[in-house]
Image (tube, rainbow, N blue to C red; front, side):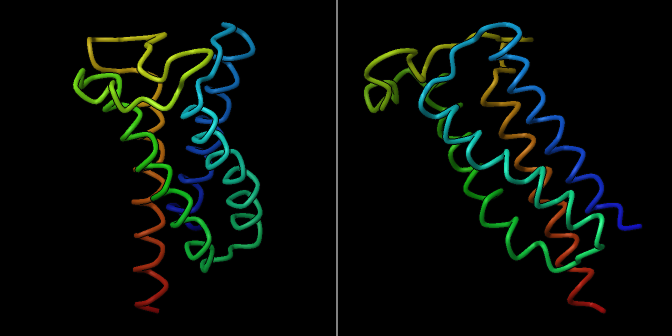
Amino acid sequence: MNKPLLLSWILSIIATAGSLYFSEILHYVPCTFCWYQRILMYPLVILLGRAFYEQDLKIYRYILPLSILGMLVSGYHYSLQKIPALQQFEMCQSGVPCSGEYINWLGFITIPFLSFIAFTLITICMALLMKKKISM
């Protein structure tokens, strides 16, 4: 059993379930950047699940571009929320503003922050998997 592969799969499941909980149960309307993050996270559940089942250690080739891009999008989204000067560059013109915060736990934990952590941990797991594959 490959622990980084399993951990990254579990993280993608938790992140996907969390985003669905926020929108479908709590009725938080996703903004544009939230949708981009979902587009990057949701396929990871299927790709990583299949890779874990087949013990495909080369999956990092497909996951790393998605997870790194997810880190960039969620990091920028979080910056829009926390750095007032960046709000003038906000993309969301209609509907929910990207700088809006549905949650703000402990003064810094927002939904884009949770997304950033998930993408970062998945990226770290894939980097470990890549290192393990290269050293084999």
